[in-house]
Image (spheres, rainbow, N blue to C red):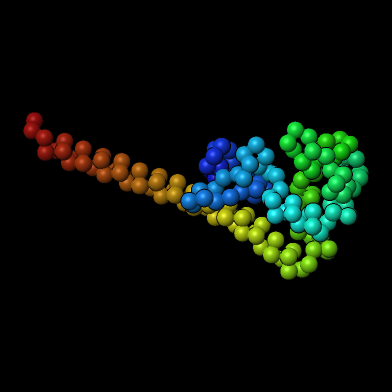
Length: 156
């Protein structure tokens, strides 16, 4: 079973922008789970505005942030074919040599922490499912034993 968003009940993937509130994970924006976080967008704008940040495989072209299209609330689209380039732009943030190393390392640590949170939540959910199944099996076995004992003691 996959961890699901507490708002929309859709699965949360490692590439989704997430938040945690009261121990529950959710998408930052359920209509665009794979969107870039505000911090990622801020880093692109501050450090990468003047150079290409995304590559469109279909068009074989590289684009600067200002060249990427926004259509219907979706951003980071190829201006020619409308392919979503968000993941490429996100990868650029974490590998761009123009970002000061301390900023890049901190950004990477934040992203890794979010991914670790999703993975650990999944592992805890899997473990809880196993424990629940074991408890159910023990309950059914105890109930069966009780019925068996009661049937032996019941007057004929």
